[in-house]
Image 1 (cartoon, rainbow, N blue to C red):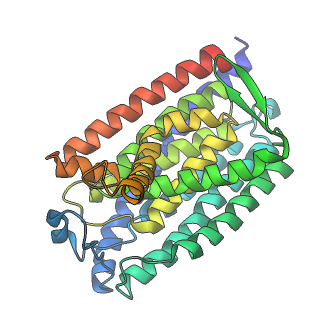
Image 2: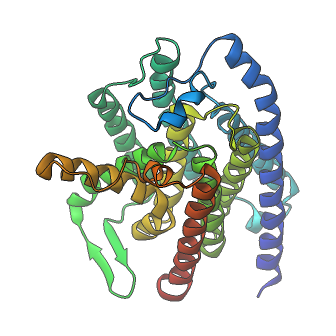
Length: 348
């Protein structure tokens, strides 16, 4: 391997560790200030009346803990990107302009999704209306935002309209690609949002997702996005200091929508759409459990699960919150390993 490539890989490896460490420290420190602030503002959660009865004790737990990683991750990325540029003396090892633009597009997509979540949380926390934004309102906002994100990526050179199938090849979709991918990204964004229902679950599953994609980004040479994955993983771990059971604060829709946008941006930038579903298998299963439950109830009057999303089904089967977090994260890790093997053996 050429010495320049070795030098570049070594540099980015240490920058990834630095990004995770900075984001972790910032997020954990922000929590120390944010939790008392949310208590003073009486900005607490209203637990859904039809949920598990034992969840009612969580009424009043502060919302908007997602601000911990929403602030920490972008700041960490900015610091480490500046360090990267400052350390490089050989222009061939420097980050390129297009990579930076794609990184900014992904970060902004996540932040603007967080804005949608913030509006939802504001309605829930301040007006104490548990359902928040209406489904149609949220869908219109997400359609506009996701279409804009797709357009930006197109302008930055992602003009392919094909989907890769491992072991088979590529399927060219033409103009149909764009509406399908917009719906796909909206589905996954909301799937991440649905995963936030047990203390520590969404944050831990997202850490596993980020680690899996960090390996994929390293294999693909997408070093700017490896910083994104590292910083987000560190930020989520800093948040988990305050969110593991018993949670002192919830990420709220502000946080889960940010994570949904970040997950979609990271997965979509690789243009390996099916790998995104595999690495994010927990998110997909959470969303599908809701879809299947609704279809079953409306068509047969019977429920498939004791309650959806599926993490509540396991709760009602007697699983502790810790057991759910560990089990779901283990499944996500296994699928992330499989995705890395598929990419490196069959798609690379």
